[in-house]
Length: 316
Ligand code: GLU
Image (tube, rainbow, N blue to C red; front, side):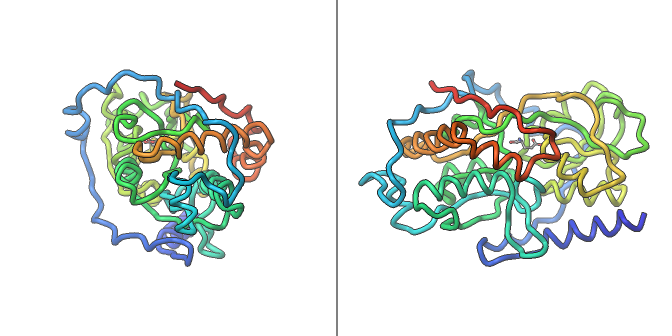
């Protein structure tokens, strides 16, 4: 078990780190543990109907970097001199601290850097704000960040409060258990403690599992990994992408079953300046076509298999 303890320590160290390019993490609230479905899940009204994958079409060709159209939100960002990106700091492969240099990096961070590149001609003109999973929608909606790229599923409920870009990755929820577990799917985990993060689609879905596992909430997925390594929970459920990053860190863990949901990832922005959503979609469109998306996948996500074709853009 020594390796496992070391891995847990590394995860804790990564959580505690800080770097110059990002805002300090607010003091973490005490862990919350929820037994059974969260009240928020059972009381929530049905989401409105929509096609969550359909976004706003680009408005013509991209302006050259450094020459954002007058009066546009892109010009506001350009004048400020940096793009403010909201993301996590403990989602290995997508956005996590590099323990050697303290920088937050990954596929999602590169999605943000590519928007900065299109605005400034420099992917480094970015400020990373670490936000909780349950603050992704509100941070995008109230403008405390310009854009959220944080393994965030575009769904109809969230579309009410924010604009989403077109889809940049198709994920799906799975389950991580101990290597010696005989469970094949989440339905084999009746009565077992399953960790997830409040404010995530996976946490809400635990309440719908017929076998009735016990939902355990943690503030971030890094905390779920530490809880799993301390035997405080028997399993973790979240997107296959996030679980792949955990499995890389824990030789005693395995990911089981088929995807139990569709989790199409998109970047979220305030819906008060749709020209920015159209601009972001134009950048994504170009990056799918010129091989940038594929290169970014190969840089970060080869643990998930060979690069698939990037998700096709859909517009309203
Ligand atoms: N894609 C999920 C969401 O946006 C996050 C991960 C999860 O649900 O486990 O809520």
